[in-house]
Image (tube, rainbow, N blue to C red; front, side):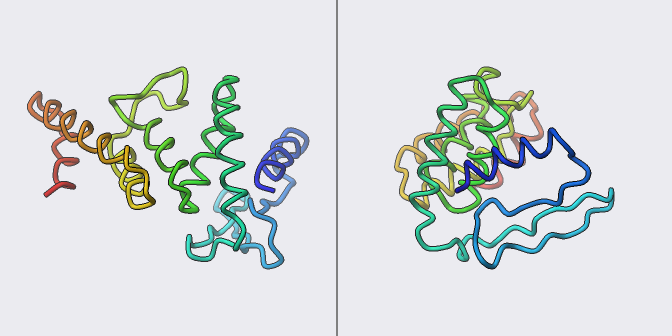
Length: 167
């Protein structure tokens, strides 16, 4: 499963990070191709959301729950990877949680690895969560807009650009 793959990757990375090729996060017979990167390492070509294997919903739910456990245990790097992966695969609860990590209204160093919040990412992932049926994302988007309006009034250029997303 997703969690086992990530744990195996971390163990292998600790042993020989440069020698091990990248592996797909979902074990499927037709795993995504590995592409060389300029620094000599490899990267997995991401699968489009619509190509997520059937039955992955339960696996993504389990990954989300595991991310929350890791987050509570202070293992923010693994938690953030799982949340981002789930969000990229169209898992609405993961998208909401990942947006929260980036939201200037909810950012906390206790729950996020990010030194600073990223309002654009919060907007993107709250929007995805809303599209995925998470009704609470609408209130978060409204609050993010209020933050952007206040920050833009204070001269924050990032907030001014973010406001263009609502026009």
